[in-house]
Amino acid sequence: MSTYVYGITAASRTSPPEGLTGVGDRPLRVLKEGELAAVVSDAPEDLRPKRRELLAHQNVLAEAAAGGSVLPLRFGSVAPDDDTVTGVLAERAEHYHERLRALDGRVEYNLKATHDEEAVLRRVMSETPELRALAEANRKAEGGSYEQRLQLGEMVAAAVRAREAEDAADVRQALESVATAVSVGPESTGWLANVSFLVDREEAEEFLAAVERVREDRPHLELRVNGPLPPYSFVEPGPAEPAGTTGGIGTEQE
Image 1 (cartoon, rainbow, N blue to C red):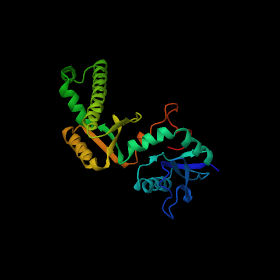
Image 2 (cartoon, rainbow, N blue to C red):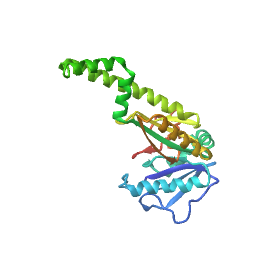
Image 3 (cartoon, rainbow, N blue to C red):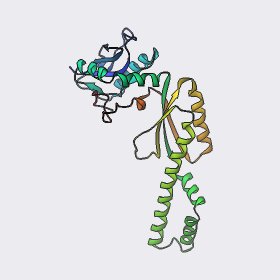
Image 4 (cartoon, rainbow, N blue to C red):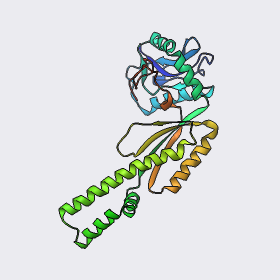
């Protein structure tokens, strides 16, 4: 049976709390290799990213992190068997030890930013004399020709794209000084920025206060913050590993 892996921690932190189960209500166990250990369970055959299973995964990580640093794997991280997991722990021991030290006492906050559409349109119009002049010319010409309207639309779209890039860099710069590390997430439709910040637990309030200052100073932006989270975005792959794997522990669902 395949082995579901929740996270990697120090071998000195042995057993999970009694009665705690993982995805599919499977009992948890700990696989040790040298000074490292992996919190695992049997993997359900019909694993799906349903709310109950996602919460089970998160609960296991929360309990594991309560006693010290843990390297969280994303939901759906499955290895062929227990031996594969312990083999990865042995092969990547130095890397995992370094990551455990680096992430100790730290959490992740993910920030996604988008524009308030009306507010950013007003902003780009006010900042771009050429747009204002063309819009005024079209207005006086009772809307202007098709070509003029098309030109105005293309110019506005280009100005908004440029503003998105500027605001994404601006948001990151405003917050990275109160974080210990930054990880830029994959681009997705609808977000001008998708950035994760690694933050010391003791400085979480300072980080959230900085987010509020960004929100107040930039009313044309809409910010969504999710956290504190296990530091998923900072469990870096080893030097010879492709993105999307953790030392041979595959990720079936994310």
